[in-house]
Image (cartoon, rainbow, N blue to C red; front, side, top):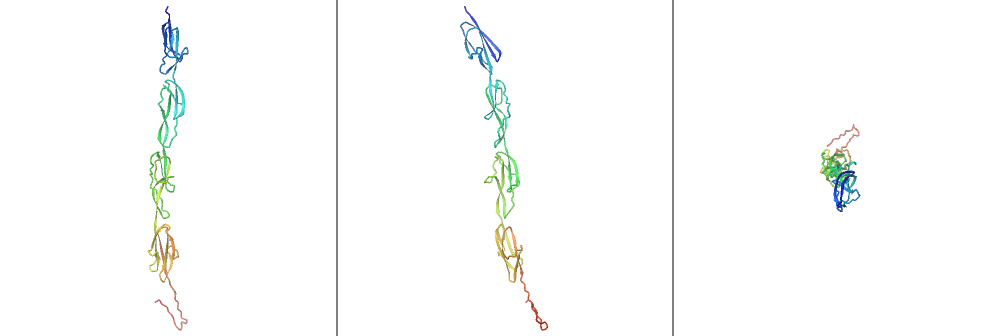
Length: 307
């Protein structure tokens, strides 16, 4: 006598039965049963706790129920190699980041601003790392230009990598101690040579000057011609600031030296050059008084006159 068996297959996702299928077979027949998960789900086990899929079973009146579960994925939000947040997300769910806004420290060249995640956040279909992305903007630095005495001549902000430009008036330095100065360029504080470099941080540039020693002339003369002579005989002497020059005044016959025009009464003296200067020797005539007398006016008289 031929015997038939009814085989029932049922599919359960989570706790809800969504599909059932039955098959009638002859006694002694082997049957393959297969559980096929839909996208986003995976097979867990049969109701008899067997986890083989597909599997072969012998004919009998029996029901085999396949249990499925939704796929879950590990989602990580990263800032470089740092894990900011880890969560488990069901298939098809769009993950979300709930932590503080990621940051990236500025470097010498750039400031950084958070600019989203890579890849773009989407519904979960696999384990996924989302890495923080940052927009970068060139940093600016204050560049200051100073004069030789520390006076600030110009200051402005310039972007990293650019060459700063000076927009003030040409630096000057007054003449001092017989030295004249001409602007010769800029030198960064701490540097050994002149030049303006590409910006890599805040910097101060100091005006540099070339120097030239000035030559001055000493002029000597007499107030009244014929009353005396002076040295240098040429009447002039030249030299740089601080040079010592000997000058002297020699009176002519019947004259005597009185003083120089600056009041000094030394006929021979040394003067130090500090600028152009004139020294005039002043002489005066030597005079004498001749007195003649008569010892007795009743006997005779006397007189005196210049020849």
